[in-house]
Image (cartoon, rainbow, N blue to C red; front, top):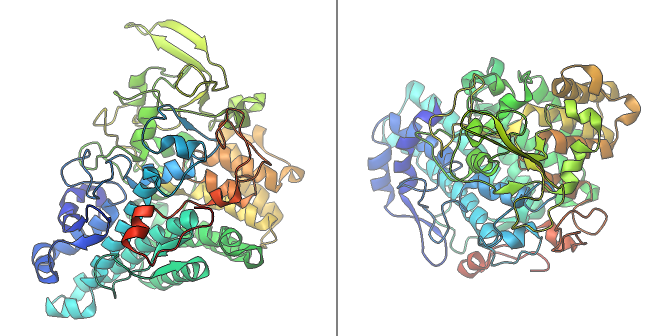
Length: 554
């Protein structure tokens, strides 16, 4: 199933949901009979319906990328990956957004959010909508429903796999809610449609539910295909194991130090490592417009699909590429070299992140070092007309001349061709990559999770040999420490929705042990309270559903 090719038809399934203007409850517009008539009247309807559950990770509205199917939420703010990036990266040392007057942004990037923040609300609403979509697919594909429609044979077997995929997609949304909020509204296919006054699930119960769902779905999921090409974009056994490994990696954060699960994390990482994934030889191929076909599909365990013609949004990799405009210093340094036009000057990197690369001359040879310290402009003949060094510090967020840039993502293919559209990119967002599995193995081993030190060192050096092109960047056994792993995760996985989670797990987020530019508000950074390790449940959601609790300090 080529999911990105049928996203246009998935809107029928998404479109039967609406959200109330005041309370953001997710409700069906029509009853079950009409839903069945509209969507499940042909065998292809089941494929379109499961594609609708996937599509919610990419698209936001029925009438084009500028509209949202969740009332009261801007089409950009409400896109799944953009919301996740804002909470996991914009709130850290990795990046900053130039336009602080944009609703909710200043609070997020200065770690001063409250329960009325629209960016927080945007992701909460999108994630809970994902749960709602998965629930409805599962309601409509029970044995009883399939018997009523006379579904049998191979189609029935296919639907069994789709049901497992829907459960994993629901678990993914719940995993993100656990990580960011530590709680979620608890609704399954057994409940009536909508989140009004459903019970809350939180902490250990939410963790256990996600774990149980991932384990239960495994038997019916498709296997990881050789090279992952045949299953790229679909939830397979590897995707479920990846979420499970992330769950175990962070168990001590979620449940307390006495509940560490590093041994389980390492065990699941070994299963993923042995399942057929591999590193693409060129690091940057993971972030190009043809990352679904250029070899990166062997490394990308789960992408959020984009397509300049059929899967268009103002989030995902697209907003990152647009925001990097003029960032290709020294290599095709024009906006056109990124395959986009339009927006610009949205993102810069904070000094502390840039220094992970630029403080060591060795990292000039690191292909992961896409931090750029210069602005370069060309004339019509391609000649350099200006070349100006940028200060590493961002003294004024509104002044785009300060702060280094990043040039990691591109809407150009590995063959040098631009994507199909200059506004809406073809570049899939790599939500999970195999490289992360190798780093998780090493971290779990260093946290007494078992495994083998030589193996852990080898996995880390596999990544560094890919980055440097040879063994010149390899580390020695004595260099393999937890502090090194934290920095290496930033060098390898920056701008991929991991940094906040990593800093919290290493005790470097709240408090004042590690301060970065504008952390807590001031330019030099300041300590922040421990309650900011979490985001608050949106006030409007709690108003609609009094069963939802609130996190400490909000």
